[in-house]
Length: 220
Length: 194
Image (cartoon, rainbow over all chains, first blue to last red; front, side, top):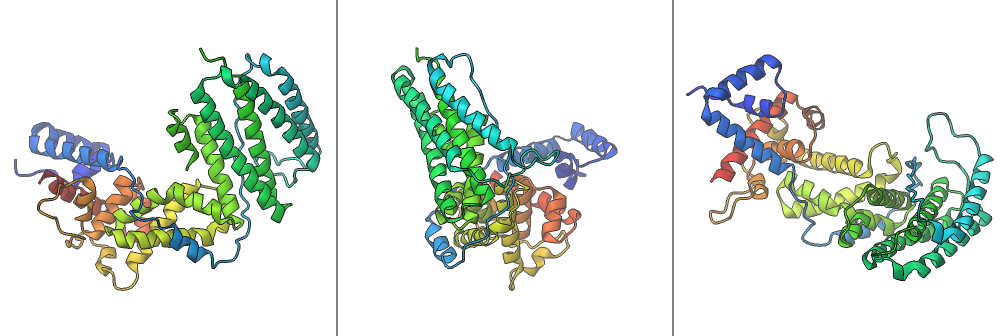
């Protein structure tokens, strides 16, 4: 057959044809093995293109970037709207950490009380930042709850799978770094709402990780 | 190292919780970088460097230009972090900025004005010729495409932009981008078949 399909093949592949054009292409494909072969080649090519692996630069480019941005002034703090974080509870196995959870509940209650006095969140914008900074008392409550849970986790450490413990510790390291950075940034800008919110979320996350860790079942 | 990479290194799948932790970590780094924290910005660079460099390298088909442009992209990001509102994911914003920067770079000076002609008959000069003994893989075949066809192929088939978006970025019609895409695919098929 001499009258082969051309650009219609890509349009067909990308589902851009109307019903009539699509029917015409399919009728042609039914009788033309050459065009079917071309279409199959193009399908393979597009699949491969969509799964290409990324490759880092052959040399580290950071030094050049750092040199150039080092000449810049500090940027303004951006008014980000954080996503509402999602909690994942694991209730049934919390008996071993009961004492720690009592302390945690106290901290959460104090936070809830504090939040109740904060300005109301506009309707439908649940994740809007509250312009509050964490007070010393709230931070101490977090620190106390975290300390208790860490003791509970230490006591349970030998009962847990070593791989799980490693992942937990890695996760806590990341969170601790975030907490340290937030505290460092807050030392320079104590009333920044995002940084306060970030610190609170990092502390919440650490509590969450610790709470789930102490509730994990004993390794078999 | 990215949080997700840590989980993977520990032999665990990136669960929604783990990915959420990564997103939170990235969001925190964006805020810290916008507040002037270069350490946080370096973490963002490490997280996205491979992705941005690959995108740029495929669009310009030159490792040297890709290095320089990748640095330009991150310097531009640093300058514009305060304008990032969080409406789109940071990675999406970053990649769009990278695409626009590369397009403007190609558009500037005297670089191939015909690339942006609203004409489906694009230039036929490949970015680099084929070495006869080289094994032709997809990345190599990409480098052999004429610049206009390569750019549309990368944006559509690799990066997943729609024709309307690509046409808007390039200032041409969707008829042109569709013609360029088909031409690029057929040329790629020819290169890969050899």
